Each structure stands twice: as C-alpha cells, then as structure tokens.
Length: 500
Image (cartoon, rainbow, N blue to C red; front, side, top):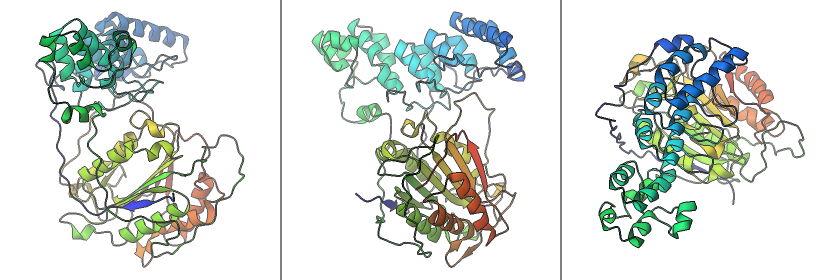
C-alpha cells in the first residue's frame, strides 16, 4: 500500500473540561506549597560521595514515611534524584510504600507523570499495590494524565484489576466502591496469578461464581457504554478525518518539486534505523486563518502545506494535513494521532506547525486565537505519553510568524506555575524558521520562504545527507530569499538521522 497523507476539512468540535475531584474535602491545589526546599536544588553534585549518602538517607526517609526528615534532606540534594536500578523518583518510592503525607509533599516538587525506566508512573505503582489513598492524591493533581501506559502498555486502571478482584473475593464493599470510583472495570479482562487460580476472566464473573449478591448490586449494570470506553485507556472515540489521499505519483503544490530517489547502502554507527516500509509519520498543522482577525491571515499557508505534503509523500512518509483547527480540535487531533497503529510501525515522526507565535517562540496560535505551548507539544509526545515513539527520532518544525502578532492579541492570558521534576525529553529536534526576535511571513506565488526552502533542501539532499548536514544546506537555501535564518535545537537527539 502506498503511503498517504490525509488533508482534513475545517470541522469544528466543542471540548469539555473534566471536573477535578477533591481529596479528603480539600481542593487538589489546597495543599500547602513548600518553597524553601527549592533553594537547595542541586546544591551537591550527584557524583559526590556525600551526596550519595544523602540520597540513600532520603529514600530511606521516604520509605519510613518521615515527612520532616524528607523536607530536611531534600534541601541538600534536590528532588530530581533517582534509584539507578529502577529509575524510581522519590515520588515513585512514596507510592510504592503507600506514604500518603510524603507523596502529598513531593507532588509540589515532582510531576505525577514522571516515569521510571520501565515507563511506570507513581500511579502505576500505587494501583498495583492497591494503595488507594496515594492513588487518589496522584490522580487529583491538575497535571495528572491517567492514560499513560507503562512498558507493558497498561494504564493504572489495568493494574487495579488485581486489588479489585481481592476486594470482591473478601466482600469488601467499601473498597469495591473506592476502586469503582477510581475507574476499575467489572467487565475488563484480567490476567494474573489470582485470576488464573480462581479460573475467572473478569471481576463480575468472580462475584457471580461466589454468589456475592451484595457485591453484584454495587457493580454497574450496563457495561457496553461509557465504562468500556474508560477501559480502552480513557480515550475519546477516534475523530473522523475528511480529506483526500495523496498518492505517490501525484504532484501537489505549486512548486511541482521532484525528490531525488533515496540512496541505499549507507552504513554508519549510531544511526536511527529507518528500515520499515513507512519511513515515518508526518503531521502538518497549518493555521492560516484566525477568528475575528483577518489581518493575521497567512496567505500562503495552504500552498505551503501542499508543497510539504508532496515532498514527504515522495520520501515514503504517511500522515495528515490539517488547516486552521481550533485549540480543542488540535488537541483532539494530536490525541488521536498519538494512539494510531501507524506510530508503532513508523521509524520516525515529524510535526510541522505553521502559525503566528509569541516573540520568544514559546507558544503558537490556533485558529480560535488560543495559545498552545510549544513545550506542551513536545511533552505530548514524550516517551511516557507516547511509548509508540520511544527511542525513535521526533522532529518538530516550527514555521512561526512573529511580525504582526503580540501576546496581547490572545483572548486568554497564559499563566505559569513553577516547574516540577518530570521525565527528561529525548530523541527530539526542533527547527525554527528564524533565530531572531521578530520575523515576517514573506510569501511568493510558490509559497512562503521558509517552507519553500525546506522543500528544496529535502528534495535535493535528503536522499543521502544526514540531518545536521541537511540543516546547513537549509541555511544556505534560506539565504537566497530571506535575511532571516533558521535555528535548530537538539533535545537528547543522540544519533544520526536520515530522512530518506
């Protein structure tokens, strides 16, 4: 089957925010914020012998649930320490040992989405151990993502199946109610030592086989609606994408550009493998028009998207093109793409964003004038949130205009909170259309300057040239039409990469 890139129509959808739940009668953000320990972050080198001793004492204090001891020690070494064998953070250790007060304190410093070497979040460990109080605190955090999967592609909901079975076995109705509130599925398939010993495949079967009528009355009667939807990792139904398929033999976009055939037989060490039929998956998000702001319209955006789709299609990529989505539609689209099977098969992923941006390039505009953070986009495809792309190269290309838009144009101001320890991003490269403070969006009959230069560079050099060399050629190409030169940012991109 030939690779394809699908172009979406402008379809509006409304998004709803899920209400946050409180814990023990308090709002999730009513926990006391501890700021004093922030001053001591990384005050001792982690390779120093004394720092290793402090690290050992710190993890021991977490295991014992000694909150004050944890607060004292963490000022000397910071919250970013991990156990070398498992990659567990202090928050993982608190979840594993069911230390509620310690976990509540550490959440001020460590993200609930941080992952171990096996892609386990603290919620995975709490669910597996049946530590429901800690699990409630982790899930109530405003940044918590309940759909993260571990190295076995299981969410925390999959892991509370065993505690759920034990609660049913011993007719613990209070615990059953708590587990149901946390997303336990009575009809979800379970496969573990306990289920094999009991000879059952679902929790409901166990309750029926034991004639636990009091338990059966607690279980939801309808299992084909929302409950099963939650068990399928909590994702919304796939969003339909309308558009057309770009075939290998089609030439789209005004450039009518032809890509050189790829070179075979390149043998080098430390190269990201590009051996599958699908060289990679490309998602092009083109924001060309903006609500109530005709002055911000990017005239060449659709031509740019068509030119880029044509070039990537000829290089063997599959993917999608979307025009002028709202912020909610953008999130829905990326959420759906993150779950598709094609990402497991693809050797790489490329995301191309064309829009207006803030002066420091840290956010771009959706068509509804809402800002989306570039850091959020990168984090959306981190190893923890998208294991399909783990250890694979991920490229983010930002063609952002910063000449006519300022922060004051946005309808909703942005707010920031202090950063917490999270998983390090890796295998990512960001390419920006300009390395200066402000740019304009120059365009011609063939498209705007940066996407046109990118298309020409890939067409001429991607068949046998590594990414860093391609970028140097891109700089040369950009110089022909614009004084503004691109910028490349390496984020844990440790190997060589060939597009084609």
